[in-house]
Amino acid sequence: MPALVLLGAQWGDEGKGKATDLLGGSVDYVVRYQGGNNAGHTVVVGDQKYALHLLPSGILSPGCTPVIGNGVVVDPSVLFSELNGLNDRGVDTSKLLISGNAHIITPYNVTVDKVTERFLGKRKIGTTGRGIGPTYADKINRVGIRIQDLYDESILTQKVEAALDGKNQLLTKVFNRRAIEVGQVVEELLGYADRLKPYVADTVLVLNQALEQDKVVLFEGGQGTLLDIDHGTYPFVTSSNPTAGGACTGAGVGPTKISRVIGILKAYTTRVGSGPFPTELFDEDGDALRRIGGERGVTTGRDRRCGWFDAVIARYATRVNGLTDFFLTKLDVLTGWEQIPVCVAYEIDGRRVEELPYSQTDFHHAKPVYEYLPGWSEDITKAKSFSDLPKNAQDYVKALEEMSGAPISAIGVGPGRDETIEINSFL
Image (tube, rainbow, N blue to C red):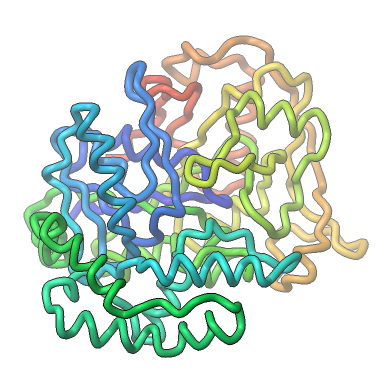
């Protein structure tokens, strides 16, 4: 049962799309198991660049079946926009499967997300404003709308009424907004039903049967470990579980069927949105990382905050996910620095701390303790094997591997699909 989980080992934006796409030609199914269109993947195939937000990256691999699992929240308008864009570029999207148990991001979820974030002012979380959090909240509060509800108008109407009972009170009395009409929402949602129907499936059954038949299934997380609702830098996190355990609940596959867990690490660190970030740079080095690395959010369009590699959070990701391997991305971005700082520990109130602080307050006050590794100036984008890398680049990779607690099995040396050094096969 060759089931692999591939996830971000930092705050997201590590290059999961490239890693998933690299494996896509060798796997039978690629499954998104959490999040929604708040996650963005950029995949470069030849001279073509694809920006994916909701769809699994495997949709670009002809022999692969892409799956949106039950743990994902789906905005139908975004889904169809993305499908239309790929179809216009000649990509076959007909194999896509969507769980009937996946929850729908409704128009009122988007409205609540935006007005709530504005209301928080300087205490805002930094959400994408796409209704993700309120949709997950509805799911937990048992007033969510699932894709399967679109095929029973009576049930759909009852569920929308139940959801809007409280939300309209909030919108009119707290936020001074107009109430949302039940009929208008129901009509809009029913308008998606016919086009969605060919994609809707019992994906739990499909995936488990595939594993029983020795098919290769790759579970693709959105966001990153430090944005996990339980294990991230709460409250500056996403509303779901991008960690490895989320693959089991978000796709309906038991943990005993997972054979490998691959963490994606950027050779430095980035973050989008609010929240603590110990190695964040506010100087020319930070600007250079942002410019050279093209650090702008695929989904949000916001500039990413940039900093040096943080081995403390890499070790944490190894632990909470049970990582078996790392895929190190964007090593080429570091070319040209005479010395490259790496955060090996934190200083908190005069104490040296080598593991992620349990306390939110401690992490907020953590200052990075750096070791300095020699850099390199040679162009590494044409490297095809580890031995092709300059010695200092090799030493940098080896140091990160030792500090992070799991072997680095692949290295990205450029944005292209073929600009990757594979050290150990993931399959």
